[in-house]
Length: 319
Image (cartoon, rainbow, N blue to C red):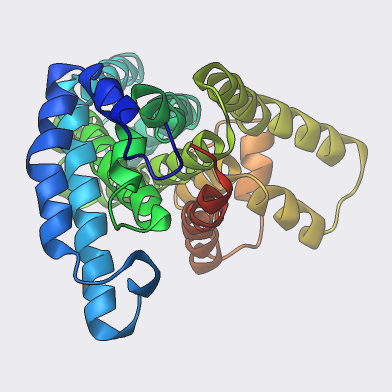
C-alpha cells in the first residue's frame, strides 16, 4: 500500500472490515466526504467556506464513529455498567431523608465514578486511531481530500457522544431514583455530579485518543491506557497523600497537585459543594481554595489539550 492509500491493497484491506464498518466506509461516508469537499487538502481551512468544509468533515466522521459504536453495542454495555454500579451505590448508601442522605449518596457516587468513568473512557478510546488503522478504515478515509486533524477531532467527538449518552443514561437512572426518594429540592448536588462526570469522561477519552494517535499497535495503546489509569486514579493520589501527610504544603502546592490530575479536579469539584465527607485525601482536596470556575476550566483544558496534541501528531503518523 502506498502513502496515498489508493492501490489495490487498500481495496483488499477494506474487504477485511466487518459488514457494518464496510457499509459505512464504502457507502454514505465516502460519498458524503466527496460531496462536501470543494477544496484541495491543503486549502481546506481557507476562508469561511473552508471552515464550513472542516466542520462538515468533522461532523461526518463523528456521525460515522457514533453509528459504529452503537452497532458494536459499546453504548449499551457502558450504559448498563453505569446503571448497575449507580443502583448498587444507592442501595447500600442508606435512605435518610433530607440533604444529608442525598449528599452521602452523591459522595459515594463520586468515589465510584473517579475509578469507573476514567477506566471506561480509556477502554473505549484507546483504539480510536490505531484500531482504525489496523482495520484498514483509516487508510481509506485519509486517501480522501480530508485533513488528518479533522479525522482525529471527528473520531473523538463521535465517541464522546456515545460515552456521554452512556453516562447520562446510566447515572441518570440513579438520579431518577434519587429524585423519587429525596424530591427535587435537593437535586442540584446530583446534577453537579452528573455534569462533572461527563466532563471527566471527556477528559480521559481525550487522553485515550492521544495515546491511540501515538501508539503503533493496539496492544501498546491498551498498555499505555492502563498505565495512565493506574497513575491518575491510584498512584497520583497515594503520592499526594504522602506529601500532604509528611509536609506542611502551602495552598499553591496543594492546588498544583489537584490541577495536575483530572480525577482530582473532579473530586474537588463535586465534594466542594457537599457537606458530606469521605475521609483521607479526598477531604484534603475538598479543602483547597480553588474556585469552581478554575476547577471547571482546568477539567475542560484536560479535554481540549490532548486532542489538540493528537491533531498535531497525527500528521507524523505513517500509514
